[in-house]
Figure 1 (cartoon, rainbow, N blue to C red):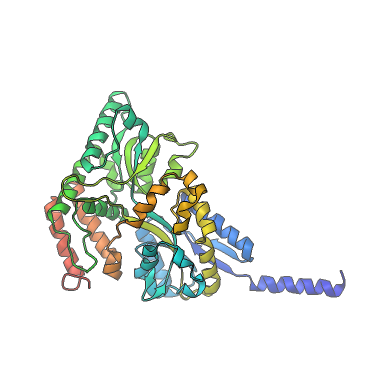
Figure 2 (figure 1 turned 45 degrees about the vertical axis):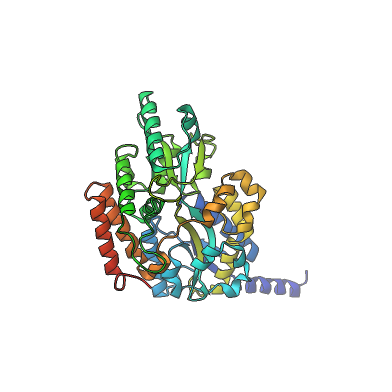
Length: 421
């Protein structure tokens, strides 16, 4: 190679290095999901020549939201790409980039409800990444041992949980509990409460028209039934449980039933899991006598770009890659994360790895949304009011009737003249 060619190659390398950017990405805080996020980011880096730094963020959703609000309001550039909970686009939308100019219409292949959720004032402020819905996990082997059917109502669940719990404890498994779920004071409890109330026919706290509907006999009955679980088939420690604490108990073989999100499937079926090959997944129960219906809280995560990111176009390209069919398929197979692209629910590789996803398609299509869109920027306060008053019932400090009345008053205070419309 001539001296001139060497100088030209060196110049090109320097120019390339000068143009390379670093994108700061906030995604999952821990576990398998974080590792898959890093793997996707590394793949994009190799493809584009740009680097990605994964910014540590709190595992607690409430703390993470507070961090995002500070970063976005300060326009600090500390985070370019943010992972958002399904209820956050309406809260943060003014600070997020419109992704429509970067999407090339691919949003039409995502579930329409999630795309609508991520559209604020006509701007697509986040791309769907994976969907969630509350599910009931159960021990197939234990139900078969005691000749029990998969429960379809809350009463059936309590009876089956109690029967297996008593039988297994008598046989020496003293640590076994019938049912574990998320009772800590955080968004996860709001999800559980929504499922209880809707499944009893008690509405969704605030309806789509902005009217407060929480004070009714069905909602009271739902909270009373949930409170009876504590100390009976659910440990009192469940009031400190989040998703991971519930999964740990179930995966260790110390619970018959568990309410959790789809991500727990691949972990519970891992090669070192004590319950591998022994579990099933189904829809959460409904009330058998109040005209309720099966209800699964809609969850999921989105990816968004900070509006004032110094590398907004590159950050948008990273978002489009991470939410692509290729990456979503890999995450579905490796981590049981439900795709937001509806064509992937016919993918044979995904269905082989996650047989339950074929049935989950219908659950996702009709999952129950939290009253986040209708309450807008006040949803955080609305959710906190829901979990706070519920915990008073679960801990025995309040009756369900008093708690529902208190919650109604709090929602009246938060709303404009008692409603959002």
